[in-house]
Structure formats: C-alpha cells, structure tokens
Image (cartoon, helix red, strand yellow):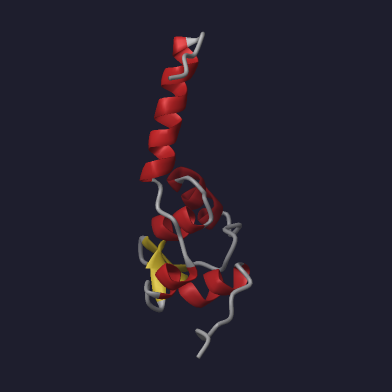
Length: 93
C-alpha cells in the first residue's frame, strides 16, 4: 500500500481520476453513430472543449468545425468532425 504525504494532493488526484473516468471516450465508431448532425455540447466533448467555451466559439464563428445555427440551437455536421479528425468520410468497407 502506498501512502501520500500530502492528503490534499491525494484527494485532488482522486477527483481528477473520477472526472477522467466519467468523461466519454470518443471512438471513430461512436462519432459515426451520432448520425448526420449532433448538438454543440456533444461536438464540444469530442474536441475536449467545455460547454461555455464551445458556445462562445460558435457565437464568434471560431468553433473547430462549421456550425449550423437553427433558430436558437446549434447543430454540428458529423462529417465535418470526422474531417477535422482526419478520419475518412465514409466508414472503411
């Protein structure tokens, strides 16, 4: 059993590990299963961006991929996400 001389660091590490564990792992297959478009928070998660930052970037036209504004909502084409990640547009056959 290992001990940590700094209990605060240990609890900080535990909470960091918990957040990492809770964060979704975005695989190519999982991204493709989103369909033609996805919402901005989901796209932000793929790019490891926070929700507030994603909305700010979209509002300023600086999100990593083109964003479609539909009324008060933002939609992000999955094909654009795949292209930004250098993944082929069509799944390999």
